[in-house]
Picture 1 (spheres, rainbow, N blue to C red):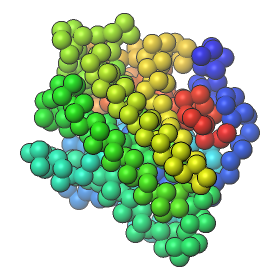
Picture 2 (cartoon, one colour):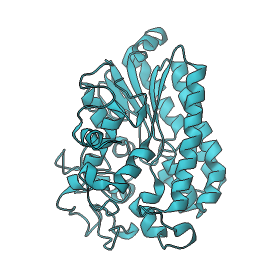
Picture 3 (cartoon, rainbow, N blue to C red):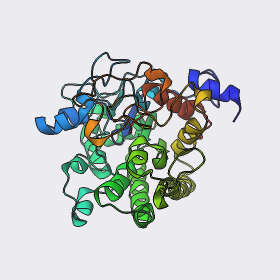
Picture 4 (cartoon, helix red, strand yellow):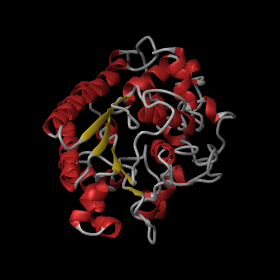
Length: 371
């Protein structure tokens, strides 16, 4: 990738879709987890203790763009915010919000969202309620329940959705968090669940197509082994903690690559099956984020493994007991726009802007949204 294209990703200029917009969408409908959360967890949860643990409701979250916490796991906007704004659409309201107009778009994503249903995780002995806020199937049901208020009859909805953009995930990150962090599996053991996880995502895409979706972005997952949370917990340089030349955990990135390889094959198969009626776009989050880690200066970033917000100290500035928004961790780094990681788990607004640009114009989305 040329330096010119790297600069264009950072600034939002140029790329695969040219300077102008070639696609016009009536609305945008999004699904996923905390990477795309825009408020559902804050509306859906009445448990004040849980909301206190879910620190996106605390300063300094939201400081860069909103000036206050906005129930986004970021200092400002998330990827779906940037995509909506680029398409001339409003910031998407959370699907659980009351009294909102959803006709130009709505976001079903919620913190803890998984590809697999919670009944599956309960069968594995998992009871942590954070993974039971809204699985992929649950979010699709939320969307179906809203459709009459968005577009009326089933027939009129199909016409409406043909002119709408769908962003389906990324799903899978939390499914592996359950396996790696809750169950204590190794990355190699977690791979045994990849076919089920990817199969659930593919089934979800099929359900959207059956409802009338035509333009659907299906992202892969981030390079897990490059996230400060995993580096701080497992980056001891031994066995599964072995680091690659970029400084990421090899075994954990191999799991992410395996998931993304399998997902991309499924997306390609779905596209062949629905080639006359559907435009599926695979988004390579892994490839882009890994390049941002390898060459952060080309994107305007520094210290790619150090969380901007948190009081963990050390190389990664991450500690589960001193996470961003907790007591003693309410002041972010001086320049969030120069950082890749916001809180050790989620990207900064600046990184989200780069990711959104790559989805809109390429080259990390096949085909680009605006092509």
